[in-house]
Length: 134
Image 1 (cartoon, rainbow, N blue to C red):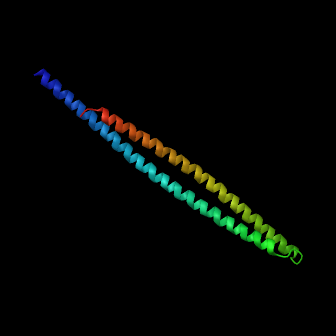
Image 2 (image 1 turned 180 degrees about the vertical axis):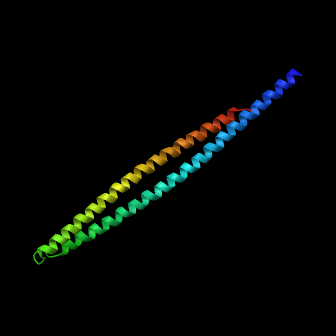
């Protein structure tokens, strides 16, 4: 009878809608996990660059301490110029490491933003799933 067919058709459409909503939820959950992994990798890269910065800072401190502890009156001009060049070279390395860390921090923040977007998409998919009658 027509009513039975219509009821069966509506039931199949609801089942289809439910399965599509579930598929969207699963796809968005997988996407979120991928974004979370990307964010963790970016955090690790930022931490590595931060460690590089600290190493350069320690090297620079050591060179400056050596320069400060050396008796300027007994130092040859050649030695004084070499120490000054070394300090400037270490300062440059430190600044370059800091610039690289800043870039990694920016990239990390972008990955973090993408995680939040993914979380919102999963939340929306969960809401849509709840709205679909099975």
